[in-house]
Image 1 (spheres, one colour):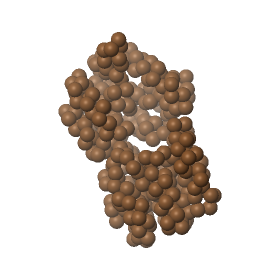
Image 2 (cartoon, rainbow, N blue to C red):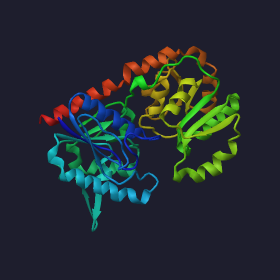
Image 3 (cartoon, helix red, strand yellow):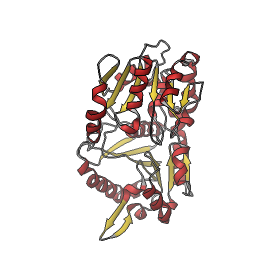
Image 4 (cartoon, rainbow, N blue to C red):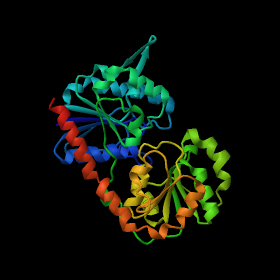
Length: 354
């Protein structure tokens, strides 16, 4: 098949540091190319993805994550570029939500997806719990002919009215996450410093247990005020340590050695790739019961699902009951890259044959 994969223009493919969507795009594209499909990736201009059967189209001159005012213009240019070349492909796979493709021209709402004749699949990577979006998706029946992919059942739930939808879980290249059963005595918070990610709750857990917390996270421009006002004063370099943002190799080292990953999310996280990354390294996860957590964490087997900070503190005392091998096995069985690529390939094949 000739497959187009459309990635957001904000982060390069593969990402240098933070970028869960772009890492999935990279692995999916490479996996499909290895299966002899011709794959073209529309992505940020500073992307480096390439290889046999793998082609790159630069949709912007650079990634625009820190240039938010420019994002929309480049998104529209990217959409128009894909639209103009659609006949080159058997299937087009978008890695952003249909609402991104909505335009308002002189008070009239149109969706650029309506102009595609080539079969489309769209993977939702972000939250679906936005009332305005739900209302738009429900009433815009032209979108109901497309194939919607969700990365967890929890994410699909608010928009389950789409007639063509399925769940395909994200996955990991397991060989890049070496197993380690010898742990050091620190807790880990990894991802992004933002209120809804539960950073303050993680700090509270560390203070109550007196176990050092390593914070390995980026601070987006929109979160800098929150960091300065709410987080920075807690950083003492001893009990609460801010390690900055790590590259991939550095991130894996933190995962391997941590006593556990804390995941005290305060929102409906669509997937939470960091949970599977920690588990792949044999590190258990203690997470709040939100979003996809119950679909990834098997309570008492590869970690614990809790509802409060105090329950998270109690769960740390029970980590001795969790086998590192069970953590690794849970990812091997359910979140392997081979499984994800095969599920996408099966879907794309069905669409291309119509």
